[in-house]
Amino acid sequence: MFATLFAASFVIFAAAYAAPGDPAVLLSGSRQELTPEKLAAVRAQYHLDEPLVVQYGRWLWDSAQGDLGRSFQYRDHVADLIGARLPTTLELVAYATVFFVILGVGSGVLAALRRGWVDSAVVGGTTLAASVPSFVAAIALVSLFGVRLGWFPVTGQGEGFTGRLHHLTLPAFALALGALAVISRVTRQAMAEAYASDHVDAARASGMAERQIVIRHVLRNALGPIVTMCGLVMAGMLAGTVVVETAFGLSGVGSLLVSAISTHDFPVTQAVLLLMVIGYVVVTTLVDLVHPLIDPRVSRGTKRHTAKRVKTA
Image 1 (cartoon, rainbow, N blue to C red):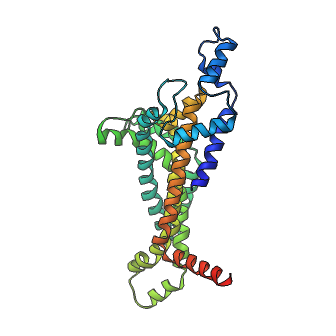
Image 2: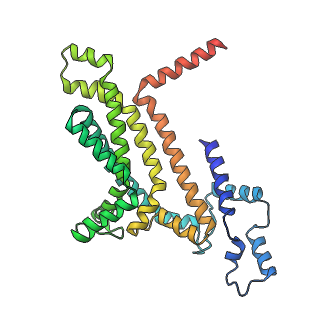
Image 3: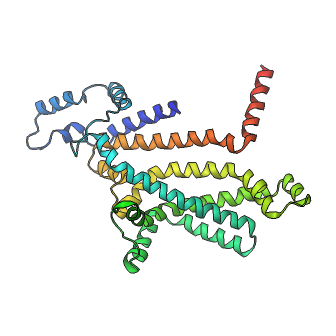
């Protein structure tokens, strides 16, 4: 995890400074008053005259201590800007996670248990949902439920728990639509594979009720890939909020990233991208740690593999 974060942080830092435009020119203010002396003074003040590796080491050390620098555009601490917008993004991702877990897992289980037209309808619906980009889904939801029907607001975060829930419903559903299709497909396939296991046939032959077979043997054995995919999708949503936040006018981390990129605000861009990578790596690491608790066969398989290697050595 730490090796991945270290490599990703260097790529983020180097890529930002490889972008077109000189940060010193942006920091100098008015181009009419720009002189070589002033440009050199700005480079020295912000350590832009140092080698890239030295700048990266200084930025990494300051970031590890919580100092993400100052925004070129807002002239404020980057940590304060992110701290003010991060709750909106986390609430949006959490709400979208509730949508795709309940609807995705539920539709996948239904398709696995009800073969025939129900399975075909679920597969067709999820295929359609997966093919719709998030910005198209956002525009369609705004047009139908926000403008024509007037059921939901189309901009802002709202006040209070119910107000925020009301305002974030359309953005969360637009964000979760593609993920819902993925989770439904994974759940359906995992349930189908668990149904084909020998122990399910043995449980059915022993006279166990079908409901108990589904809960104790089928769904329980299918939880491993389902939980893993849910964790990966949720981690990827931290970076996927950019389009949805922009479409619905939400003041989240995604919209902050768009603004920072368009204005060449390198400290904000680097900090937001680093935050997204940290969120993804942490969530995927937690999924790896939880997986053996859900499926003990993973832990036993690892132990057997380790014992075999030791014996061979």
